[in-house]
Length: 593
Image (tube, rainbow, N blue to C red):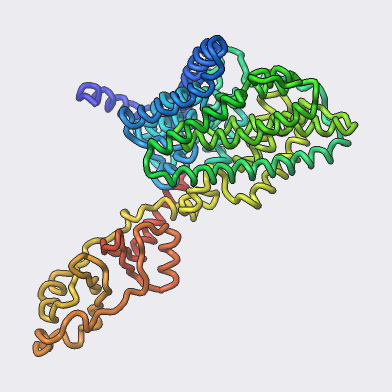
């Protein structure tokens, strides 16, 4: 920042400290963050729609449907080139990378993430990538929230709260569902539901939705009005739908993990991108409804326009034959998960939020059609709506978000009972087979997932570098007792000495107590070596260990100091007293309001 601007900014900060309390300033920042997140989401949506209207509506439909195959490949390669030559850093998946920033980086998010997704996500989705925009919107908003907090020197707790505000703002602006947005921020990011944090979330959500209305008018993503109320006699069918969405959620998650692992085997980026891009192009060529986010199919199914929902197919489908339609919709359900996962594996930037709604709408519609074919009469629109809830609850592991979002964006509050029933069963079923969502699986595997447990969160947020002590004098096994006393004991205030070899690999430790009885016997100075006194450490801490693992090692050994190894080399010690002190300080920082 130039000197003149910095001086002006400092004057603003000083004025703020004099006239605005910390609490009031947080409320002001929450409104600002909500506005910025809402504006970022609007820009993201407009850019994507612009690209889609030019390519799909303007070129593909007027030139040749073969471009359904070509455009996704072009889009994936454009994203790759942008990331490699312009951004030059990993963007990551929006919500997962935000969760990581909260758990391991104290809510500090790099500046480039404020614009990276704004550039790459519209290209990915606009050119046909089978993904959504909610993840990139959250990534952009979270980065804005984090950097606003950093700009005004807010503490860790406030920084994380503003990230939650930005997340709620992005969600509120995208779906025009401010209540569901708050629930989403609390449920996904494990924010504390207390009045002190709830008011900023409310302000951010309202600020974002007003921003969305200002720029996008009253347009809504799902144009649907509830026509039929739910009936008690249909409860059994809703239970079947819940189980079906649970199975589909497990399939969705497992397929995502499988395809991700498969493409991670390729060491060369061009092979991975080339194969995945061709795969996406082929799927979209054969099944055009998979193109982009897929709001058209969802809206048509909600409004009973099955023929219009399948109108993009380039081969004849007799929509008067129900079983043919059911078969086609099931193909769409199966391949949506594959197309989405392949888009991400190819390096595309997008989210999984909308694909779950897409897949759930098709599955719910299929269930209703099958039930009606056996002589019953259920509302296809209601089942389409509730199917979306089931998939979202299962795949995202966010049943409350699913219930409130679907009810709020469609006006389906009269369906609250079946919404709750399906969401609960689907979530429970999926949770049994897939303990962590796509967002959290990798973080949970590495022990970096933030939860409602404040103690565990505080421990997890500690960085090993913060408690690492490096002022131990090292010894070598061939050193004599005299050399040890001269080069080690006399120059150290410690009573513990690590022993390493020439390659700095850790061999053991020497305690001052073990040589105290002979340290003044000069006859032993030249004929006794360090190796005689060296012993094994009670345990070894590896630099990659989680803080929870480190704490367990201290508890299991009863030791006060344990050596730390990184890349097979000794780098220092961690003491129990320093670890506990840092943990207490972090706990105070995390729980302070």
